[in-house]
Length: 440
Ligand code: FCB
Image (cartoon, rainbow, N blue to C red):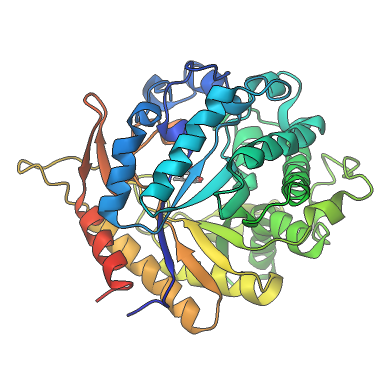
């Protein structure tokens, strides 16, 4: 099975999950510093204070990307490193770090793909309401312009946000991520302000003369009703609205879905939407990033709502492995939403990896996971989906948000006490895929 020439094989990370150096060189605190230091918020009290110490070890880490053979590397820029107060003075040392990183990639022949927001909102902005405050969107656009001014001559791919669903819902409704709120009205407001931030950032990049391609990454789920019973079908409709259409419709159709107002009527009348917002949110993009982890099987809960049917074979994070869901999502986005080039900016499997007696990290389940998802991606390409790249999550083990260091996603193992990186069996396997531009 061969991929088209020029298909991009990448690897992905995010700033707070790998960098560490949380208080170094003028970096300000983010909501994840606050949250991870809140007792009980993160498993075992883990924080990103040190993480993979990538802030200091980046040259050796980039050498590992060379060893892996990737064509591109997706990393995020920490807003609190660059604009420590969220708005106002720029911290040159923060920009210098990403400048070095970008040059380091280019020297190694690796294409940089920059995510501007991977969840590390400056705490100073949270203190003024965070994503519930419309001003945050404008501050984000200013930050995007600052980063683009410095890196725009060398970065060919820009992603505004990573997974606005998780920022909004996991952070403001489920309370499992920073800022740790549980309020549905705030959640829907945050969805809108995140999308607006995306739209304003796109405008700022365009105004700055961006030459690279501009996009956004959404996490999308494939949703299946438990039966043809109208109540189960309605349950699936609700989950699809909540997880997918609330993002896809405004981004690609310039409107919230027709059933959104009724669905959220008990908490909001969408009064936060102002004239022109949806046009900004739907501003033309150059590509679209998709993160895929979950396929949901849902049924009616008997009270007008929905509930998930647990997967038959849960992984260590409680979700199932469903490569076919990736194909379903790629088809749907291409058919129903946009002809834009698509890229899988993340997919991956959490395991409790450990080195065996021989030192080998035998993550055969991860190999099977990627094998299945790469085959699903290839099948989508053959059906005509314009997919141009695949970025496994993750390059190396890292701070997995509320799970701390308790689960591992990397193809490189990180021995945290020594910060040694060890290629897992999946790294060798993936290097082979890259080399062959496909699977034998
Ligand atoms: C995604 C996040 C990424 C990582 C993976 C496992 O939701 O974008 O940072 O945590 O999940």
